[in-house]
Amino acid sequence: MPLLHRRVSKQTYQGILDKMKQRLSGWAASQLSFAGRITLTQSVLQAIPIYAMQTTNLPASIKTKIDQVCRRFLWSGNAKMRKMSLISWHTICQPKLTGGLGFKRLEIMNGALLLKVAWNLITEPGKLCAQVLATKYRVSLSDIPQSLPTRHGSHLWKSVGRVWDHAKRGLRWNVGNGLRVQFWWDCWATTSSPLAAFTLKPIPPELCDLYVADFVTADGNWNWPKFSYLLSHNAVMRIASVHPPSAWNGPDKAYWAAATHGKFTVKSAYDHLAQPSLQERDTIWRLAWSWKGPQSIKTFIWLVLHNRLKTRGELTSRHLTIDTHCERCGYELETTIHVLRDCPYSRSVWLRLLRDHNHQEFFNADLVGWLSRNLQASNKYPCSNLWRVMFGVAIWQIWFWRNHFIFTKEYWESDVIAMDIKVRATEIQ
Ligand SMILES: [Zn+2]
Image (tube, rainbow, N blue to C red; front, side, top):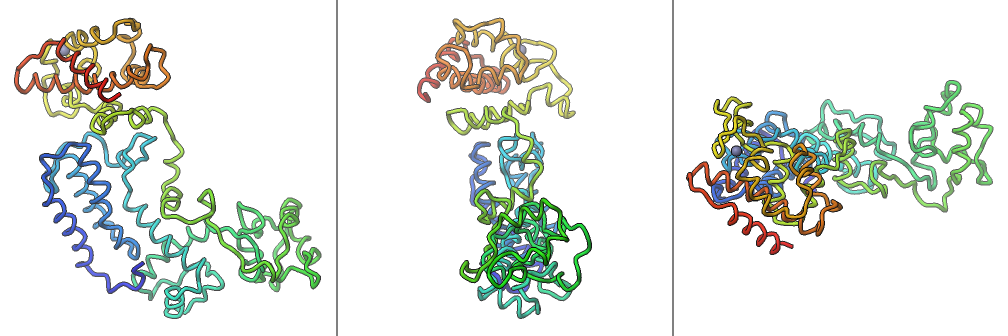
């Protein structure tokens, strides 16, 4: 990790933006599909600032510019051109299961990367880089400071100071020899809060800064009279369940509360910082991502689930056109469900595909109900797997067919479309 960075200046930041623009100029953006642009934005553009963010808290203005470049490329294939965003950037940055595309929010990513530096300083104070920093800023890392003195620090030091509190709050201890864990102020006996939160009366000053090892008798048992009168019954019971520290146990070991196995990872730090948006899970987004078939169709299904196809109805609501009619059948309002299912042209394709299915149910559901019933693995239709695939291919193909008609005024027979859908679906399956 580039811990001892050269001075951070405006050029450092400009370098990130230049690099992004350089990448963009190398891509034949007009040839790329939406699915292709998603992949490139996520795996290439969003990865460029990571190196700098490991040691620097990027200024908000730069983060905004980086997001802007990503956003414009995603929707228009071009860093400069503005184009209508069908889905807000905030939604794009939600996890896939809650309706987003799992893009990283720079602000949170930056925090998670800096948290890693803080975490390493806390858990590996013996490492060279930690020692260099500790000496330079005159802090002792063997006692974990409550906060970092950041006033005169370098850019890195100040950046780490910002997340120090988060690092401390995610810190839990397995007591070994008890020489590093502070009895009252660190989380070791309970997983929720330090013991200071469970006191019945003020902690006597002479006990205040002691370590866990200081509360053990000469024969290696807990020294109950020294502390039990200060604590609630529950807290005392918790301590009784912890082995008293002993030199034989080796050093105290820190673990990261936000990860399942206690091991700190940038991903778990990101998720930890991104809460509570992770809480609201909704199964409907699984429908798009668990659909088995080409990425371009998955992405299309995702857009449909958000009800964001550029139908006349949608364009009108964004004041981009005033004509709401369906250009194929003349129906007064072209909505997503109209284009994909109810327009007589689309309907005739479905009738060729449906055969034994329950027509009543199929043509009466609302958009979300219709999509979820037909995209779910366990639907009650015969040959449900093939149907699932066929349904995804069909809505995609019908949309393509509609666009082709609008742009060329050339009409394809519905038999041909239905045949095409069947062939494609069988190929995929
Ligand atoms: Zn129509």
